[in-house]
Image (cartoon, rainbow, N blue to C red; front, side, top):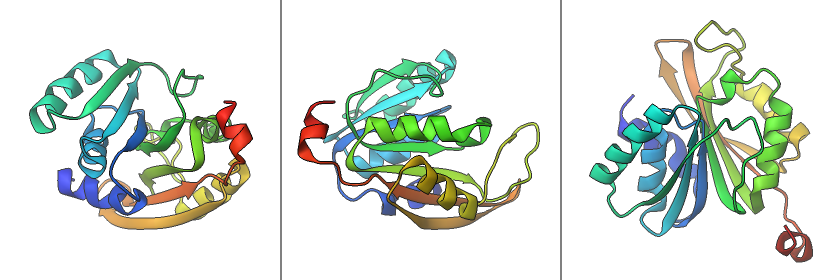
Length: 186
């Protein structure tokens, strides 16, 4: 896949330019760059990955391709609580399949997101993993899991063939509206 493919997988889940977003398990930054294109220089990205080398490479690529983008690079494991502000959205592209027990991570994502915030995932559309993709899930399982985690609405964005495990899917799950008192107190 190339940059245009990455953008096309996520862009319909992003309602407007700007906002504060996080890329959890950002790796080499392919989807961080796609997110930067979608939200523009008005936005802010927290790029989180436990591999410092990947984050350092991202800095150079981001500065080269999107020099006006504001990004904070955080070396951390996204399966543990993170110190993040209330987010408009989260991207998890090819990172959730490394997590066996997904529900606590998704509930934590729900906590990070503002009212009607968005969680966009990109995953292999299969239940059969391997040592490189140990815990993938189908879109149907994602819908069920997102609902169980507390998301109010889930929509399939795109599918794309993959020579590795058959197909990718991208989906957006939206948090339920929160009352104004609970949102300002967090």
